[in-house]
Length: 103
Image (cartoon, rainbow, N blue to C red; front, top):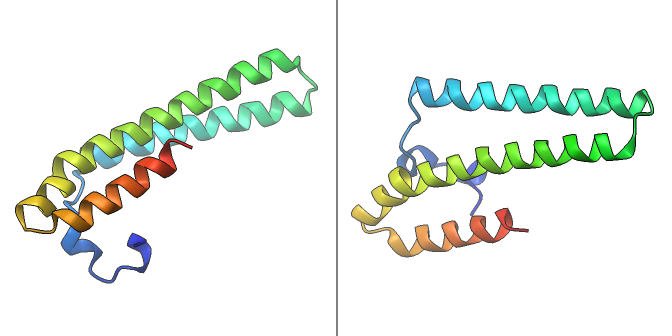
């Protein structure tokens, strides 16, 4: 089930703190800047290896953000679902996202 389609999404999630939101936004903005930098490198016809190194750094940064969100989800939202007796649905949802994340 996609959370965007779930009208009861707020009942499932534990809201992020302002600090968590700020940290995620800061990381995503940094990644956005890295992507713009790669675009400029392509426009400037830079050396392929230099571009590939930057792409690798972007992928690593995105993976770190994803793992941070996954860890938070397990420790808060998933734990809440288990406590409230919604473990089976949450396990399926978690496994689906882990499979998607690991592609």
